[in-house]
Image 1 (cartoon, rainbow, N blue to C red):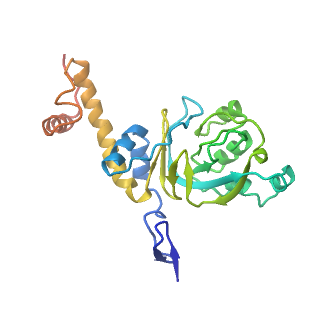
Image 2 (cartoon, rainbow, N blue to C red; image 1 turned 90 degrees about the horizontal axis):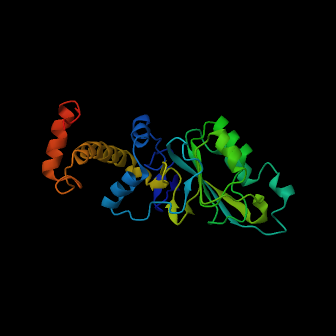
Length: 261
């Protein structure tokens, strides 16, 4: 027996693909130390240009870094005979199921079609996700009860606040399938990294190597910043050259000392 994976190829049941492999603690730790811009630069080197969720911003400026594999919820436009509050309250409603089924450690990515006519989530849903150990939520729509969500403390990203009730404009149609969020393709298991600037998506098969390279870039920038503070120009320093990389590696080997003026 086999199943079809994201690329359309078949994989024997029970066999792990890169997309279904769990995110290692080491990769998660590395990504928790890098910026979304660093990750986007590393992916650009590999030919990926559309990975940043433009227009999506952190709900709170001091929320912690967000890292985790994507679990997705896709909305489509609502229709009045189906999307009633009575139907919304049913236990098989996919919006409510997403809150109860998103795995611990994962990031709930909500494709709201970029719509802010109604809410993609409220504070009680955020509180439930936090209690279940979910890492955070990302949507290209917006939330209601934003001040209360900030108090919950769950890392959340949105386009802008959207207080009206969900059924007014959105119908939940699919759980954990491919989605487009803020114009970026997100497949289940892709790794989400969010910081104080925004959110970037890493294809799962590349997450481990991207984490290593992005962290290296961050640490090199610390070295470059020390030199810039002493008046050194960017030329021959940033972007790194073979010579400056040699300087950096010698600096690391020496224990990363502060530079004397």
